[in-house]
Image 1 (cartoon, chains in turn red, purple):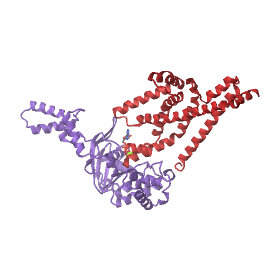
Image 2 (cartoon, rainbow over the protein chains, first blue to last red):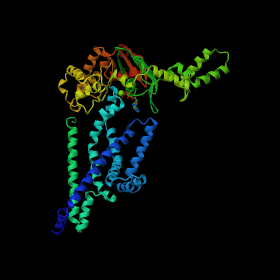
Image 3 (cartoon, chains in turn red, cyan):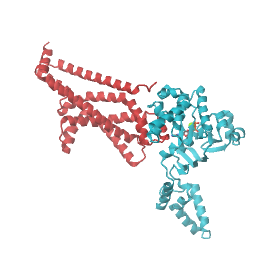
Image 4 (tube, rainbow over the protein chains, first blue to last red):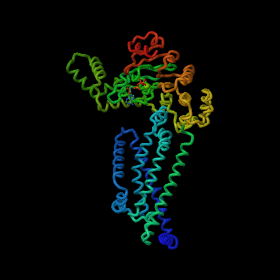
Length: 231
Length: 307
Ligand SMILES: Nc1ncnc2c1ncn2[C@@H]1O[C@H](COP(=O)(O)OP(=O)(O)OP(=O)(O)O)[C@@H](O)[C@H]1O
Ligand SMILES: [Mg+2]
């Protein structure tokens, strides 16, 4: 069990676990805050597509959303990350920690996906719900807020959950901009021991466990939201 | 009173309403009948502006709820560039005619041939604005006066029965939660569904849902109730309970406009029946006139099919 022993030594005796924990934390930060930013951007973008396309500025915003979504869905995440880190932020004279950069990059990226998810969710709510709200005297905004959005969100929780899991796994590319995430931490162990099997299998297990936990949480939320009001 | 003035509604090239005018007076129970696709629902939905008329106006209790239609206001047409130009031309052509005559003629020509353009100058815009301003009412306020009941019910799926009933009066700050709840419970008790107060719509039968949708509208204490085929989507055994509630409402003196295929109900409850055909009111009258002495051929044909 030489492979296991050298892994253990690197991880515990040489305090490699500190690195791993930091990596785990970074992965969590990037995924969670990335998604939160993504949801904010996504909701704003989705709004531009849902509003009645009558006023000229709504049309302009809606075109902007089209472009935004095309851009972020049409290029690989790593490329976006590299451009933000090596091109965009230096050009703008912005100097912040790579972790924050990664959060912003993932937020911008998932904003594109979330906007499509939210739009689908809102459109999936029967038009009659809106009409009933409006007919009772609610304005457009209140109808959205009180009647349509709660139903839309419930409809999209599973899809949003999937988006979060995808995002979580995709964060493994952040080592490209020198962020130590959980992948990078295990890579470091592997590189310093020249033993690859154990670290990478443990790494895979780590992701698997995290994803399983997240999946469980999503199911829980879903069930909570559904309690009572479904057949 | 709801006044429909010369309302047209186009869906792109599809002309669904082609010049409908009528008035719904206080206390009336107006039943709208007609073949499928004749524009009954569209007319009803124009009354509370769920559909915006392409031309024409809708007035509620003396207030304009649509944008003003220039063709319905002589002073607006007279302020237009087209009018000024045409009057000028007419004066040159026939100086003998009196000014009054020419004004009348040009006004008619413009009206009958839809001659107004998109831009007709500042005076025209000001005249339109003045009408809008004098008669302005926020559509969301106007809608509080008109309860609506839909064919497919549309109770809010994300709320239980009580919240469905109190959402609007509380959300629009017309009543406190306690007042609204008290009223909701009273109405629920009246229709015998007080035990369903915590239930979600999906758990109720179609008839129960529709009756709750009706009292949801009543919780806003509207002056008018609009019904769009409230029983058409129901299982036959549930139609009766909904019609019964509507009948009670009629007896209480509610002003009602009802699109329905229930001819028996129409005969019993209606004070006036409107027969729509191909986007116009083809005939209207008392139930007796419509059902026993129809004049319009299409109406006779329609009645022979449904009676
Ligand atoms: N939002 C819309 N967009 C396009 N066409 C529409 C729309 N609403 C209605 N129509 C069309 O307008 C026509 C009249 O519709 P309407 O619903 O007013 O008829 P109706 O008399 O109520 O018929 P029914 O008895 O079937 O309910 C139909 O041909 C319908 O397809
Ligand atoms: Mg209809």
